[in-house]
Image (cartoon, rainbow, N blue to C red; front, top):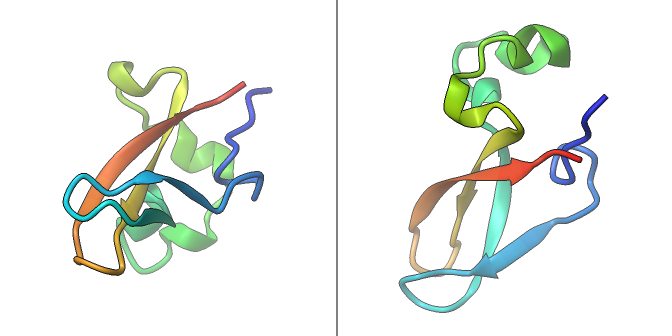
Length: 78
């Protein structure tokens, strides 16, 4: 089974922000923000809705607290 480093707490911050150079913070999987109960669903249920471009990755919202920029970053599962 593939494992996402962000979902499993192996990393808490990542590369620098394109706008200001500060470290980006990981806010969670994009699937957890789809509706009121999606954060409480089983991981495998929300993982089944992946698009073909996300086949080996886990998309997360990441953002910069300094300049308020936000991005979607796909972490490769290993």
